[in-house]
Length: 300
Ligand code: SF4
Image (cartoon, rainbow, N blue to C red; front, top):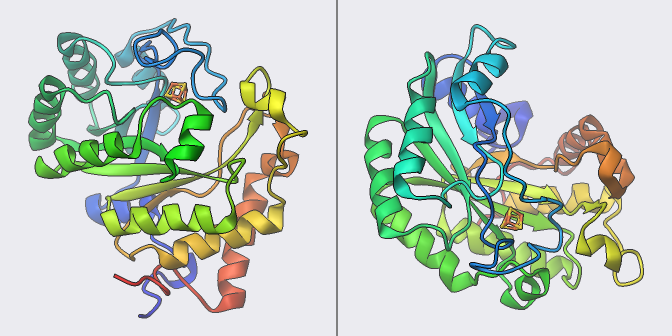
């Protein structure tokens, strides 16, 4: 196995998309006003314990207005409309179609990224995604967080590993790309538990992976448990864990994130994570120190 990523050391989605499309591709994060079934009672109540989402679902402007506003910051790029907030397949299929098609109709929007829960993909919705996948560049972002159901139950996520595997199977059957989210530093998990989740995802071979650092955010149930029930990761510990994780992922899996994005005002811990640049630099430095790269220890 050799380092095919040069000084990047891993397969960043930005570099991958630039090669694929020959220009810079920018993700525009949108809020379509969807809500979450883990808050309204249909799948659960209270939401995942780490999520500060209030489920208000209010949005001030239409999708084209949001795109226009965001894309004016990067006028020369092409865009992927990223349906990020809440659960973006949790609505009647005609409403979903309207939002997705509205986004795709905007000039220079070449595709969609849709974040959702594994248990919110009915056959009707899968058919719509199948149709969109044939005419645009599409990927679906699925929250897994951990492969361990006992941890997920304590996080109150309301879906199981079986739900996730079924969602992956249905999306794969339709040739739809997937990006899997994992959280590193979850309470009740050892380093081995976390790396087992990474290796499990590597074997499923999604299009992409997002690694999140666990943040303790104000007004969440996780915040009530902190610091008495668990402690957050130290910076060096996290950097080493990210490098360990990337070393075992196959080289063709694109990496969409290696930190988190918590609003500084709401962040309780770990406060070192506010400086994202220093985490990214730390990861590069550690790869260099180890003379290592994504996939070095991948056993496929
Ligand atoms: S993390 Fe996602 S599924 Fe969990 S409560 Fe928040 S919006 Fe809902």
